[in-house]
Image 1 (cartoon, rainbow, N blue to C red):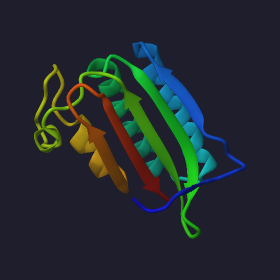
Image 2: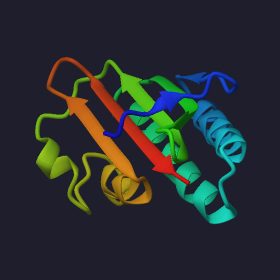
Image 3: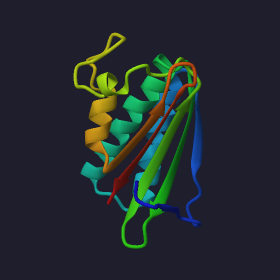
Length: 140
């Protein structure tokens, strides 16, 4: 990932993810941070969609967790970085989990792969027994 520096004038927002209502709050906070970063409506829509998918994954597959959402810069560009962390069972096969259509739940299997396409940068760290951490950045 690009070395992204948090904007000191726009502190990160943490949202605990423990219930369906929290996914809505994650979406709202992602929208707010995207507006602070000066995103267009299309950029905001893509970011909020990724936030929703990743928050839902943390809740449904990871048993809950949290999201940190913040405005960042790399010196030239502004963007929004979102980090989703859960302490669930982890993902045994990341390559398979990132394929379109792969699901272990009731969805369409587009959560991780779709989020990866909607963001400029995508990083995932997971293993069985130690939860999952997904960090994405969408640059303006």
